Figure (cartoon, rainbow over the protein chains, first blue to last red):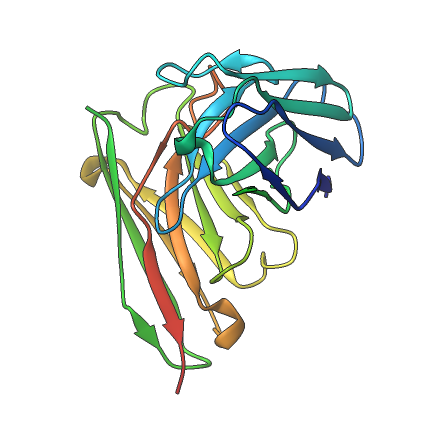
Length: 107
Length: 120
């Protein structure tokens, strides 16, 4: 199975901050990397697919980059509604594993 | 409008078989390139990919759970069913179904999830 490792597991930030979350795959997944946002008690929501494509309806302050094994999710200016947990997921090979999550908390 | 909804028992006893149904609308699982998967999330923990079924009836399973899982579809009813045998308290989780079209190879629509507790 392809292992997905996210870092950090949690971070504290303030509104307006630039936030970056990294995701590393245990082998090359080309650009088959997705990012989701999850708020407590809710289903995850797709933000970024194919490493860098913004899902319809997702705010443009979210961006993704990377290919191969190393990927980054960037929030250019953190908004109050962005405090949540973020997951990466590889869709290169089944089982299409998720990372362990990164919780973005209020500083 | 695409929707998915999970249904099944809220409480199951250890060693029993859990059967969950995902009923969806707004798309067809007979459409080339369409896929539906099950994902679970134990309380306070990360998402875990469980199984996927494709438009052509290909099936894929979690490596660690594959001996206990069966996924199937009923295209005429717009349903995907997941069965998990021999459950234990470690299977307590919210179970989600989600759609994954090959065009974007990501879960673009999710159900609301259903909490399943395994306890005697």
